Image 1 (spheres, rainbow, N blue to C red):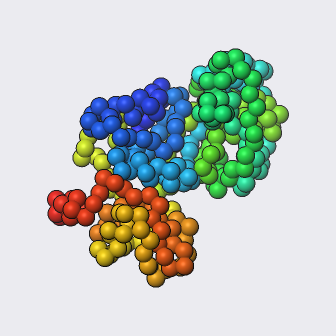
Image 2: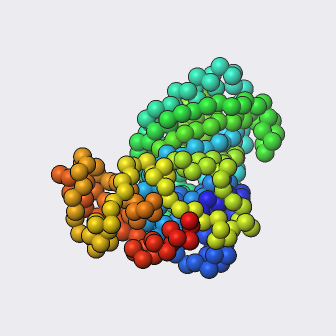
Image 3: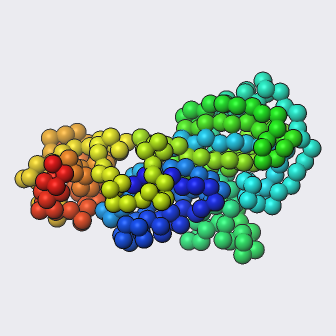
Length: 298
């Protein structure tokens, strides 16, 4: 299910609401959205939770506003704010600096984040008074579009602000980008607004509001939902797949494929030397259930 998370609500609250409305306990999401952020939240339901590990690695599209001359310990408006003299920045400098970030870059995650250090969230360690050090990691900006330059932010009047759309790799932090962009121009910078618009091929335009969540909104996976190859298997191989037994498939090697039977997604596998090795099997499904579901659908 695709849900549009509003600003001011935690990602966990969305899951909690979905569990209650659907009367289903097994629900997870593919990528936390900060409380101040809004946008697309992908929910994996029952066997769909096994797709989360793949969906979460997909590229994502964000629309964000970045204000300059403001610093925050959380790199967003929810933290401890410090204001400096409003900087004067030429549009040319902004355009050149923004474009310079496109491609592969090193990025240090925000200290207030869900990144885990020895099993504990970085944000929890900071709030407990601990000092932490986060390691920079390589991420990628596939596309960056400067959509608007404003001399005055609505949230912070008198301070310049830009609006940017980013298509990025998994693990990218928009708040860190705001900090690093400001630093490169010689000013403090924070993320003043953040909207997640897409996760791979999933779009916010197809998402439902929290109050619209119901069982009719649950979608089935299709091959287009995955960024890895997809293959249909025959009835002859179905038992082998569900029991985790290797079987032949006349295809080249793939480290990971999405496996379908009668247009139903049933898990992931690896192909090596024309042998399929099941890796994740959706236990919610078996041949009888798939046949029943197909009859109901048709």
